[in-house]
Amino acid sequence: MKKILGLTMASILLFSCNQAQKPAKIETDDDKTYYSVGYLYGKRFADFKLNDREKAALMQGVREGVSGQKEQVKTMEFAMKFKDIVQKKMASKSTGEIEKGKKFLENFVKTEKAQKTESGLAYKILTPGKDPKPKATDTVKVHYKGTLIDGTEFDSSYKRNKPIEFPLNRVIKGWTEGMQLIGKGGKIKLVIPSDLAYGNQGAPPSIPGGATLVFEVELLDIVTGKNDGEHKGHNH
Image (cartoon, rainbow, N blue to C red):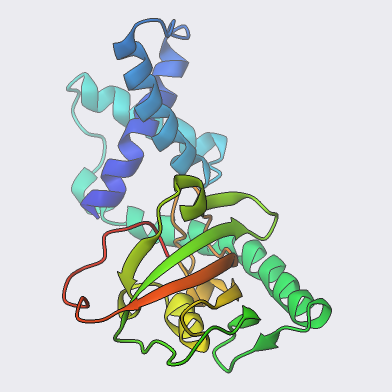
């Protein structure tokens, strides 16, 4: 709850300031820093598609809180309901993404002669690699590229020119399942529905809620004896 409120507060303040003041001139490094924080949080909050009434209520609450005015409602009681509102809005927004993803996945299976597992993961083995294949408990070393279904790239180890290692049982389900289908030296294309990726929540700002993800992954190595710590890399 604290995290959700924290992520949205900066953007609420941004809405309020824009209403009460003239647009700021972004000139100094400090200006640019504050602007960047506000912009990034604002992008997250924009996903909720607030109507004018909702924006007005938020802005009034911020203005009165900042100026120390007496609260009009029992704020802690109603603030606890914010999580439910956010979840409903996210679920509503993700519905369209899920439907688009389903069509994309089925077309991938049909046009690229890919396969689909019982879980709903779609895949095409580009290069099978050498046995043995990794187990869910193994740590793997990979190069990969991740895109949305419209082709927007949100991450790539190739661009960083640095492969990454991670335990297969500590990443999204689609990766855990998909990487066990090839051996060392293999390459696979994965189309991962949202329920095997980031669900309705997504991974803002690059991955919207309900998004189906497309990965091309090259298995460089199976690293033994290293699956004893948390993976802290990007969002796989």
